[in-house]
Every structure is written in structure tokens, then in C-alpha cells.
Amino acid sequence: MMDIQTVGVIGAGVMGSSLAQTLAQTGHDVILIDHQDEVLKAVKDNFIKNVRLQMMFSREPSKEDPQDVLDRIMFSTDPSDLSGARYVVENVTEKWDIKETIFKALDEICNKDCIFASDTSAIPIQKLAMLTSRPDKVIGLHFMNPVTLKPAVEMIKSPLTSQETIEVSQTLLRQMKKEWIMVNDSPGFVSNRVLMLTINEAIFLVQENVASPKDIDRVFKSCFSYKMGPLETGDLIGLDTILLSLEVLYDHLKSPKFEPCPLLKEMVAKGDLGRKSGKGFFTYPA
Image (cartoon, rainbow, N blue to C red; front, side, top):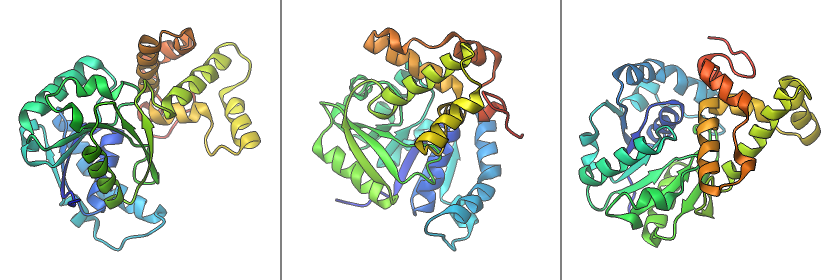
């Protein structure tokens, strides 16, 4: 199985920028695409600092110059720059119309042998695959935040995903020094089918004044040895992403247990999105 040198990453938000950094640090050439110049500029401006921080906490510290890592990333607002990529990972928001537009465009832009992976939180992979003329070359790679520090990836195969696509994806993850857990396609897969339900229920506990956010998280951290409680985790992921993911799960599974808590909807409407906005269930420094 050949090595993969050039990887496209669509979306320069928290997950996409962290994924691009991880790929560049493992020797890949990265084409990072976002429709906003200012987003790409912010990622580029913070990149050296982020690489240095990651090197401090890495299990295998690197002595490579962060500038050399940065030089492996091409920042672009033009999706046609992905035409030469061997592999493309989509990391945009959990809105179907946006993903639909992107996958249809990718199918026209990219070489017929290019594999498409989605880092979607909840949308079924087969549904995305059917937007393309290459459904066998579409797979789910659900990276965890922050990508630079998490050792494992949830890999999702749809009924249409070919064995070759799986093997190429496993090769890429080996190159990135990541392990993988293979699961079958289903809305939310394993991680978010359970996690979103847990976070949503924790938000109901806040709404019902059963306990404070701090004490809810303390139960999980002190009693079950979780590193983070469900509300801290929601703030880290982004409460807007939590809401969108719950809506996807509710729409696909038709189960009332996935109906988003009214408090969650209220917080997202106010712009209290968690770490990225500076305030969620907890407050974060600017």
C-alpha cells in the first residue's frame, strides 16, 4: 500500500486546523481549505505557537523547527487546489446543505482515485457517499479533539466502502501514528451516539437545578475517574456542534431521547458556545 504524501483538509476550524497540524507534523503536505480568508490567517498566525505547545505535551517530542512544519501547509480558499490530493478529509459544520455542496464539488474537482473521508459527528457515511460517483471511496474518520494529542480515531465503514479504501485509510493513520477502532455506519456511530446523549442529559440536570455544572462534572471526574466531565466536554466540542449533532440523531433515529434540551438551544442562540466563544457552562480566558 503506497504512502500518502498530499492530504486535503476542508474546514479550518478547531478540528480542521488541529488535523492539518497533525498531518504536517507527521511529514505530510497539507492543503487546508476554508471559505474565509480571515479564518485561514488566524490559523496561520497561531500555528507556530500551537506546534510548540503540542511538542511540550507530546509523548514523543520532536526537535523539528515549527516553521518547517508550517511550510508543509498550503492555505487556500480555492477548492480546485485539491485536484492533486490523494486523500481529502472534510471537517465542516454539521449542516447537510453545506456538506452536500462540498461532496458534490469534490467529486468533480478530485482525481477519480482520490478517497474522501468525513470527520462528521453524526451524519451517516453512506448518505454522504451517495452524493458522489465513487461511494466505495468514501469513509468516516472521526478524529477527537485535540487531534494532535488523541491517540485513536473512530473509523466508520459504510456498506459501500471498499476494502481498498479501508486499507488506504489505515495506512494514512499509521503514518499519523494513530490507532483506529473500526465501527459500522450508523447515525452518531459509537462515540457520539453515547456522548451526545450524555451531554444532553447533563444539560437537563442543569436546567432542572439538580446540581451546578461544576458539581455535575465533579461526579464524573471524582467518582468515575473521567478526565473531563460531560459539560466541560460539551464546551470543548462547541455547544453549537452538540446541538447540530443531536438534531441529526433525532432526525435519523426518530427517538425522543435525542431531542435537544431547551437550555442548550437557548445558550447557542445567545452565542454561549463554550471554549471558542469564551463562555459556555464555564468561562474561559480570551
